[in-house]
Image (cartoon, rainbow, N blue to C red):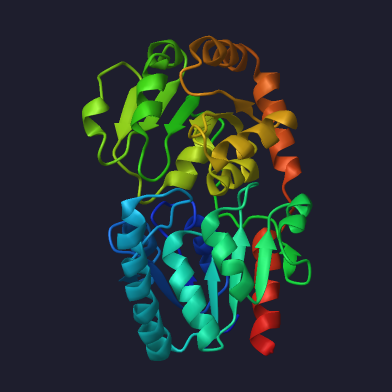
Length: 340
């Protein structure tokens, strides 16, 4: 541990790019500054960990023609100069990011100022943000061995995916189903799973994270509990769950894997999450359901409810896919780069 080491953590817009960074900050003691977006959900979560939070402008480049791209180019330019200013002010020894467009201009600025950056690739499919950062990174870390081929092999390190600390939950607690659409929630996922809440709540406590903008989707039902957003205690709720129904971001999947949970993944249509879901479904490590596939969802849920061995087997398979000691692997890499 090195309290005097200054580290920038950069991510946001969604919480998927935030949780691996918080996992590192939990275990490796340093002087951290978290750089996030102006209006994303990450500020409340980061500050609940006692970390300093600062924000910069955030733009998004799309792979298709859009007038918004011109506006976002201006935002990215503004964010670059904001990043230069922040890096000169705080003088970090290293910059860590697990993706997101908010990190792109800061990684570019760090390269200009000769500050090493580490870019973490979580998802099976490489996103545009990481493609834009990879040439400027000192190292690129990946979750699985098969992801190495997507980057310059001289830069790639297989670390696994860092996950936050968890507690051991009581076996006497009532069985739980957790439903979540991610940090911002997901309206279409909420509508889809609402059809199955009556059936699930007959035998389980159902805990549903709707998202702060989706509160009107809440309805009353026995054994059904709703939340706008969970700032603290998410890992504990995941630890209690027997079945988790969620989107398919790699950060969330990794935390579920560390807990050996049975996952039903409903990916965002036509997104990188479909690649994530298909990868785990092929390994019998999760159940993949396309949004609005009511019959398939009903069949999978009926099986998981009735057969504990299916829940246990899926959780074990998921757990066994991931490399062990990801946080320690990342800390080792940080120390190696800091020495140089």
